[in-house]
Length: 229
Length: 204
Image (cartoon, rainbow over all chains, first blue to last red; front, top):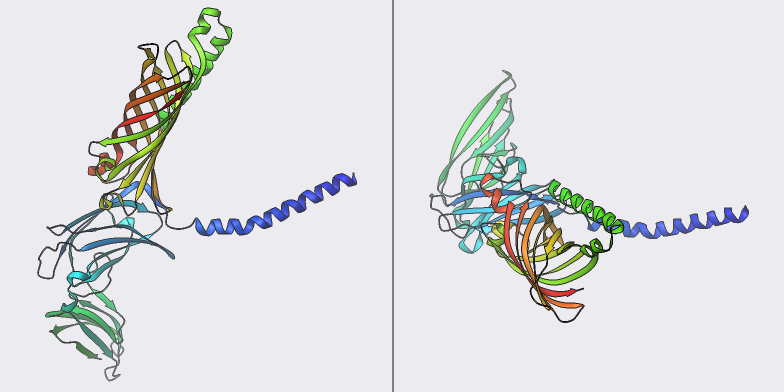
């Protein structure tokens, strides 16, 4: 009886040692087997037309789709626009990931235009058609600094603001304006255009909100635009 | 997949039925139904054609095949096989950012042996099985597509001696892969057609 008990104890300790040895291996396996998973039976398609700011179709602009899941990043597809400015990329659907779609060609002088937070839900029947993507040349971009300054003279509070125009910044799909926070903020915008700054202020005396719209002419030099309230 | 399972179930039913017959029948019928292993090792080369991603965006590379016949009913030989084919991506805009894919399949076959001379015979055959296309790039996995494959072909064998034969084969293989995509691309990613050429050895 004692011998059997001893045998069981020995077996138990042996199993324990083996399990302890396996834990680092299991951890290593768990760490290396993570990453972005793909559904090979689902193929997503993106179609785009790439233009310059004057509406000219652009060839040889690289389109790159990157999937992100936590700290993991994969380029899932890439290609170049053809002579008519069109690109079509087909790739397996990344699981539980968001995507970035970027357009660039530094050799031709074009800045990267990026759309972020693209998900498979943005695809209609497995296809995402981006009709016109405008890319800007690096030497066609200038800084615009918007300064919201509370003078406390009018007893108003900043509520919200956005900027409408050709802006070289990462953006969401279908986003036509850049949001900003009401403090000093810089944007990289196309030269020789008029951008519109829309903002809303709350009047503490009347308890009413009011909307304002300020056109700002951008030429070839950097612009600093204060807005006092 | 349902079709594949049905085919295998049917195959095993036939095997079991044949075994029972073989155990209970008299001398002349034992010669008609035999359990006789015949093993084939082959190097494969798939030639994809038609409007499918494997023909438009890949280069075919040589693959490997293994098959076995184990039940003979008169001149019909029932067996199973495994093939693996390798493909290199040539157009990543159509596939995604990975370098290679490989297609592996497990299938059941029925061969009909036609002995032309003492040393030369031909084997028309049909088969059906499960296929899977896996996409890889430097150890990363870019997903897989399951499918059902249907095959019809011809194998010729030249006997060196009683045990070893040199075999040549050609098969037409249609594979229907599972796919969810825009309607205009469903066939492009779903329906693969190929001629698979093979050369190898057969052990009797």
